[in-house]
Image (cartoon, rainbow, N blue to C red; front, side):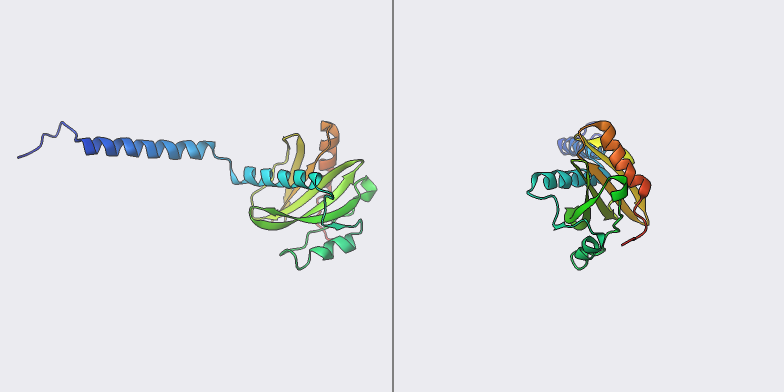
Length: 178
């Protein structure tokens, strides 16, 4: 008894439908899922927002980079590079440890007039955007020496936010001047 080749069985039809569902789901997920850099950006901006909501936006309060930089030693793998931007109108007010992609990372907190700027350093988590507005917060980033820097500003005015973040990108904290 031979089967005719022209009539598929119900099991073959069910397997075909199942395979089509799996492939279409995977294709949709790959197109619509945010990239890793997008997830990191969301976490960096979220950390900045959480800091603004807290009683104080830092774990260590100090305008002295010689106090802030050593505070990170022993708490995270690599202490951040601390740049003195007080002459440009961005005094350091402290630092904190954020958790981005389940990794503790350093964030330096600067002040611009009445606004705060968080500069977070990450390593191996993707390249930050050059300049962008995310949820009303200005984000600008750069990569230097394998470390990605994310500056997030809560400035309400677009121009002030861009100028604040651009100051950090132009100064690129590449040398440890502490």
